[in-house]
Length: 280
Image: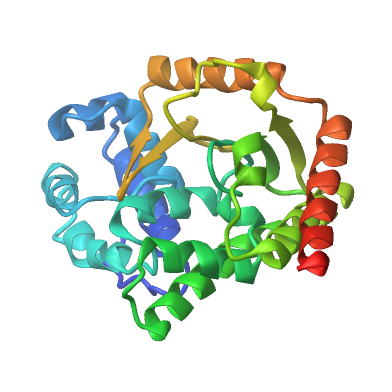
């Protein structure tokens, strides 16, 4: 087996660490399930570490070094994974999002981050942190816009968003900012870069009333669900739990307007914002 090597943090440390984990596990003759036992995790979690869709924790790295006789390789390089420009509760989800094949999101109150404009994102972050310096807000906005570059690829990931009507009606940053944000979303949908549906108020009660939901699937790892609350977020990888959230999303999407009717509503609301601003 080759000796330990230093990972380059600029070249996707998690992917490199995952590839090394797979190499050493196979060399040791262990299945993913067998390697998961001493770490008290599932075989699917080991698969997600190998695929780079989950972040390796320091205690897991130490145990892997012990089980795989890796001479401290994983502990030494695990620190590279801690470098993130995102808040702690969202960092792992953002990293998984970057390698997802499909992203399905139900957004209850705000336009999803991947579809936000700079002005809209700035208004949202300023509302989150009313006493933060402009430098802090600038960094947060830059990170959000960097995430949105995922959509520069014409096909991957496949993004499907169900947007609650509340997100259209909740004014963030003023009428012109809202008009611009909605028209930006319309542009992405009309360029076939995102599927967008609106869940109207008339749909009434539904399975996702308690909050937003993001589902991510991958070409070589099990799917994940991400739930976010006030300053908190949690990735779910338990298969039964993820299936439940997949059903939740499917039922919410079934209650939403068609993509065509959704775009018509979004355009109408955008025009209302722009028209109202002109009258002021």
